[in-house]
Image 1 (cartoon, helix red, strand yellow):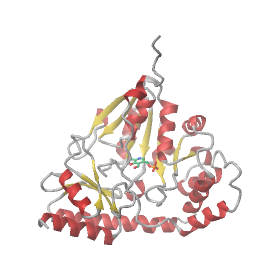
Image 2 (cartoon, rainbow, N blue to C red; image 1 turned 60 degrees about the horizontal axis):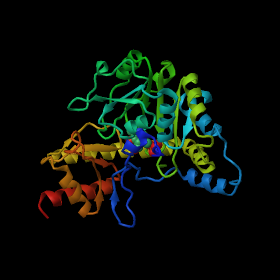
Image 3 (cartoon, protein in one colour; image 1 turned 180 degrees about the horizontal axis):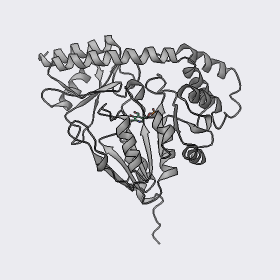
Length: 352
Ligand SMILES: Cc1ncc(COP(=O)(O)O)c(C=O)c1O
């Protein structure tokens, strides 16, 4: 008798999410996964060391209460309106589990964060990609109001572009399902949707400590919204989704918001200088509100540029799909790092 497959049909067919390359051994200027070039606040390492000396033999707080309290206080939410995640990816997965069942519609603008379709397929949900315009603009009426779950990365990745809070409010009111505004990069932007998460019962905002808090290696994120939505996420989360070190690190990061502000402001200033320098060289730079830029070289041969920069020790990101293949996504590092990129651009353009 033929045995039925041990693996679910959806998972057999699934193309898994491919994270950006983490180079091993090679010395590269790493500008491919939107990490922060500055270290986390000094109190973070102290808090982690103290936690190591405390009681790692005991389980962590399953609900990360102290971290959530700090976040809530800083951003204007009650503790039961905040949930912590093992990176914001963890929160996105919880949203799928809680809000979209088999056959339900999950929609998001496209091109965007390529984890969304993977999570939807794991859940056997139906996927709808809402097309962006040529310069990554969006229309509210392009979204299906019946979707169970809508993700909008704002600022978007890989484009770095944003929609306004007013746009998101109109969208939230049009949708019958849940709207998750993925604000992994919002600390580098002018606007955010926190007011919306307070006032609209169907809106959640998710945040990451990987980018603006320099804690990609720690895996920390959180989401905020109405008590009902947050309570639903609590039901589907892994029991101990944040370990003791992550909780201590998160608390310490939020205890030093002045450090966070200084680092994010620096990155925004560097981004604007880098944008202007590339534009002077004839590159097309989409208006970015994130810690990266999505750029088209004059030739449109972004793949060629990816290889040429890599040969010079600079790692950026190139996405091979039809909609993105003429652009590179370059993370904003320090001023000195971006000068290194510009020197390499000039050398390649000059035929060196
Ligand atoms: C739009 C977007 N959302 C979420 C994430 C995941 O962030 P985290 O490191 O918090 O899981 C990323 C990471 O690159 C991202 O680009």
